[in-house]
Image 1 (spheres, rainbow, N blue to C red):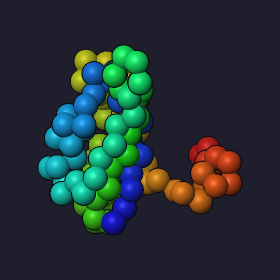
Image 2: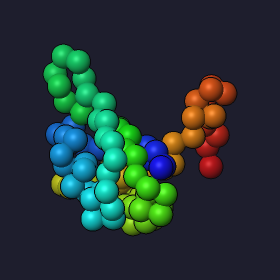
Image 3: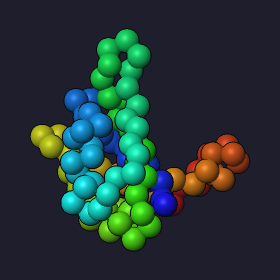
Image 4: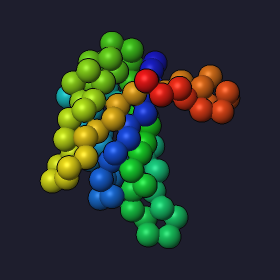
Length: 92
């Protein structure tokens, strides 16, 4: 099981819309979209879990794609819990 970070999501993104993007590559085991506690709008990122080969296919296909009706490109990365424990991720 692999956990993916999805960044640059539009404010109107929902768990259902994100799930729809990724289900063509396999079964989404779990999904969590960060939303503002007051407005309920998406904060622009979320996490999903998929099987390894499905997650790699989704990451390869969706990373860098333009998000619906915006000038932002989607960021899809493998989540690295060790980087979080060290205080952040190194930029490439």
